[in-house]
Length: 456
Image 1 (cartoon, rainbow, N blue to C red):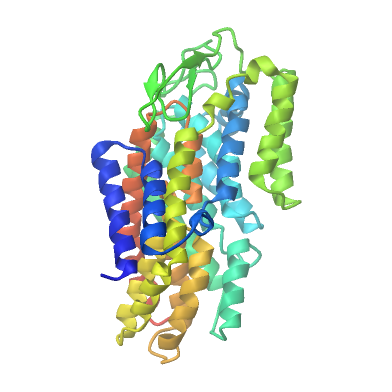
Image 2: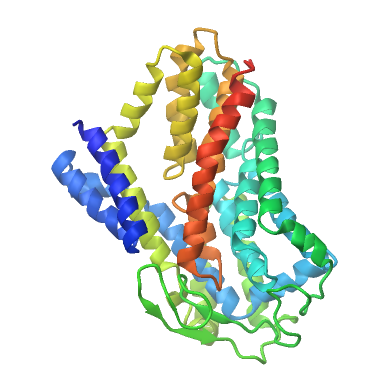
């Protein structure tokens, strides 16, 4: 048995054990990375840790730390009130507002994870308050980010169009952008219908300070709610790693309809995060940690429990799995799979298999990195003229990015970490199942719509 096949089978075993034994998948993946790296790939510790996602670790810690402070001092509840007023109490419009905001951010140049890191905590706090499915809200944020992600001036669009030009393939920037935007709008519409969007329309308008929604807080509660370490629901809970977590309840007298100095400072910090990421291209994680530390120093009482609310179980899970994927990359498993597919003599079959490889691998790794590897692999059979290059590139782009709802991708991990007051283990399973459905369905549909007709 080849080392590449062994590494894939070990990954399957990790999934099975984590699913059947409720062991943190990240811890299992770290152990698997050590075993496969040392015994199969002959990697030393440096080679194994080469795949550790240090940047994602900092983003997860920094963003959840900052928004834990925002929840503690009532800023996120104030933002929820403001959002309800903005849409005149129509809760059903909020998921689409969040979709549009993240799409606009990525379309004008924000990196997709940065846009999700900014919008997801606010969107999911809103979902928690008004009884909206966190899966619905999280999916709308991620699909919004990907919907705008291939505009001609976006990061993804610029990179993919550059790869197409470098490989001397026919390209069309507008077609690429519209293919991704339309695909994500359609998927978002399906998700909206399937996960309670129609019931939100039926609910009608609600009052900002407590309305008819199932998740609304009683009138006059001021947004009081139980906050816990990420990984628990309300009250005393258990994280995915099985550790009991203590919780702290905000005082009932907390009035979240008004601004106070702490909330003004927190709102300023959130605006500063957006400006730093979009205008100055600063790292979202490091910026968020810095802003959180400044707020903690000024208002230690509000934020003294915030460190405990960082998404530690999610950090372990995501970093462990991505470290193992890094081992797969180091030992050539991903390239081995891609080259095997590109050598198939039937171009249409090779095209759909490349779309699936892009979707499956991108669910765990960098979407744009996967496209950078797969587009050159498609060049040999694109040169035969039987497959349109424009349609193939668009199908690869859609297949490799819509799967970012997976909890193992950066965007999915941010959504998982940002959701307050949920059963973290249940939400993780929901994201994993939804991501699996997207991986199974979207590449085939993208291939059928974009590749088979022979665009370009």
